[in-house]
Length: 640
Ligand code: ADP
Image (cartoon, rainbow, N blue to C red; front, side, top):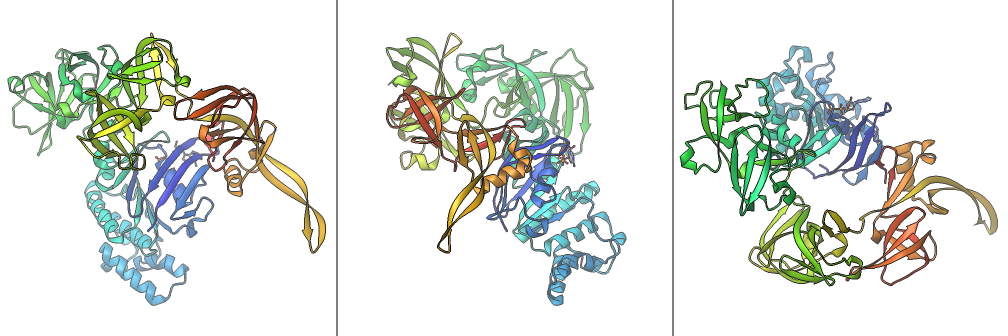
């Protein structure tokens, strides 16, 4: 039983293939995690790094409280089950299961008890004296599972264990592995390319593509709230229908138009509050996603027509309990094959349909998904990043949503009318504006607060710790303010005010320094050579901690560690003005009201530093090495 923590894990194979990029996840004890994605997406590589069968190029892997990056697989307290069972053909089932325990020199009767117990759990007691070749695929995989569970590992790793089995047996073994997980109360990490396997077994699923994590969530959330078009299409059979379209806001409604057809539906604007207004101009192309079960045959009048589109039937597939109707929303099309206007509808199959029939299909408006055409990211994220608002600046005052705030000196703008972008995490809970809480939802580790300010919608995210007791629930009032260093104001297409960058970056190198130090030994002063490793930024040398030096060597190797281009990253709060350190020159003192910062030049870089007093001229800056990140510039790998 153990947590598994993956922080900024990368895998670059010697041939340069970047198989895993910046994998971050905290796996809780006893979770059943499934890594899923198409072939080559990096799921096995990630699992093999956890197992210790593959070196980790950069990042930190913890099992329980221990960093295991350099620990041998046998010492990691894990057990692994592979697709090909990896049994010893000449040994009986009993000996196969007992093998690892014998190697560990456990007493004979203890081994016997464990083998018998595992065989009972897996229903293979009658086969203990048989050899693997006398058994079916499913039975062999049970033996492999038995061999893993007798080790009582902290973490069970399973790499496509059911891929060699036929469909029926796979379904049965799926249920058995889930039961086994409940019985063993151990952390399971399971790799599969099969989304049905992932959905039915995982407590949380990691969807991967091209070496990048796309989304980590529960099966239900992945299905209902896919973060992008890839996840939407990967999860669910038959696949989600995708169409190109546009959104046009008129009054309190938005019409969703389907390209290449006459189809159009209308939804209340309240369903699209979280969308960036630019999507609602009737011109910007979006991708409309609709699951086959969210479309149903209907009588147009019964639904008032708002959610009804016309579909020309092409053919159908009877699946017994349901029928898949294939059709096209372009009534000119008779498409049997792929077409950008093709639709699949999951139906009960009661109505007789012929090819060429034009039917009315009602779409479940609450379940229409929208994605950006270019980035493929969800247009209606569960947690919106920004509030997009109209604003006016007049004589140093910012007006938005019927409220007025004094702009601090660092955020001064000329008089204008324009757009204001307030990140949802820039709404603070210590200001003078009174907002009403409409709803408060806990998701993805934060609270999303839907507020109204003078009757108009504003989203805010908060962590339980920064709310304190300030926020009750729906219907309560809360005092809010704006973190001005995070906002953007746009007028006539030009950014008049931009946020203070969240990260400072400096070029740096990793170096070795030899020094001779005088040490006292038995009353005598002796000279001793010492080698120190550290980072240089400009002229400055900062000694690296042992842990950080090891991370650099592990990621770059001994030779390349000293010649690879690196950059140091830290926030404005991670630098302090000091007597020694990196030479900087103050360009501007920034007063954001409740906080002050200095904008400085360091060589060719501009950096921001938190500072409580106004300072000018030349200063020195000390980074807080507990918080500084180090990135290898060429491959963009975060090493520390
Ligand atoms: P998956 O398990 O998702 O099918 P893998 O983790 O096996 O994918 O592979 C991820 C990527 O890394 C693929 O592009 C694959 O070709 C590449 N890869 C895997 N093993 C090696 C290796 N030993 N050397 C070089 N590239 C590899």
